[in-house]
Image (cartoon, rainbow over all chains, first blue to last red):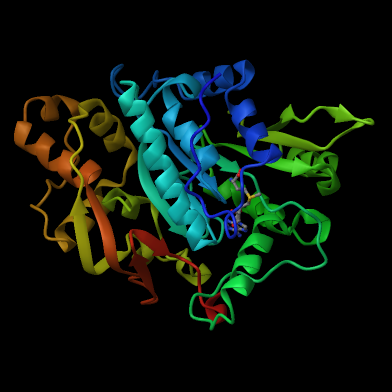
Length: 257
Length: 127
Ligand SMILES: C[S@@+](CC[C@H](N)C(=O)[O-])C[C@H]1O[C@@H](n2cnc3c(N)ncnc32)[C@H](O)[C@@H]1O
């Protein structure tokens, strides 16, 4: 078991607290089958470069919240991806989540340093909506634990210029952004799925996205299969079937050629 | 935010996506900080083949760093050029933007960097 990063400094009144979904991500990414898949996919052998030079994977987590998932992957890059020379960055619409992630990654790096172990190269966190400002075709590995709870409305994105009424209102708005997914809980995830083909690297691009049962995972998978034979999708992690259905599951979506 | 981040960022405005002028964004009034990082030649070698060298040259010159060569050095060249290795180590790994503005060369929109965090949330009329 790889150690879970410390998040004791995170203000949970306005940043999503690590929960069952977060831990499912840690378990799935560090499972034997996923580390085998990732290590093969990102192995250093590359036909176009010399044997000792191989282009660093670019890893992006959307919606980092506390930073627990990104810092886990970042700190344990050598165990999970088979290489420590990865470039990592995180994105969140919540400025406090961005700040918390910076702290969490820093703490995880210090833990690794203290034990003379390696970690990735973290660029920092960006305040933003999904991937709209990331150069196309660059992301090799994308992670997203989205706001997935079905709600009658999707909360508006934060506007830093807008006048805030009270800190309490601001905090509850930020927390609503962490779980509220609008119709079928899929409004944000659908937007991200639509951008995947252009955002993911055209040869090694790969994404892990969490869904809950109300998101209609089978329909989502059917949708991705309709992208054609250059894409594959599989359920690679879940909370276990209860009463015949999986409460949470993680899809792996990847380019096959 | 590491200076290298600029190699992965473009303008968030949809209409700018097709314009080559939206990449790289141009730093304006930026405050830079430098963290000391232990030499990591393997990381530098493996970062080089995946970045847009021309964009890095632009960013480095706009921020007043020593002029970079027109083409990216190879690993073999770097192994024999301590000075260049050191410059790239500083530029790619150690330098961060803590405060300032990133400007789109196409639409002129300005993205603010505050406490090392760049804000790419667009005002409503640009979404
Ligand atoms: C379920 S939480 C996951 C947090 C963390 N990754 C974890 O696993 O514990 C969802 C996160 O996504 C962020 N988020 C919501 N909508 C977003 C969007 N459009 N773009 C980027 N992040 C978003 C929220 O602020 C929140 O931090």
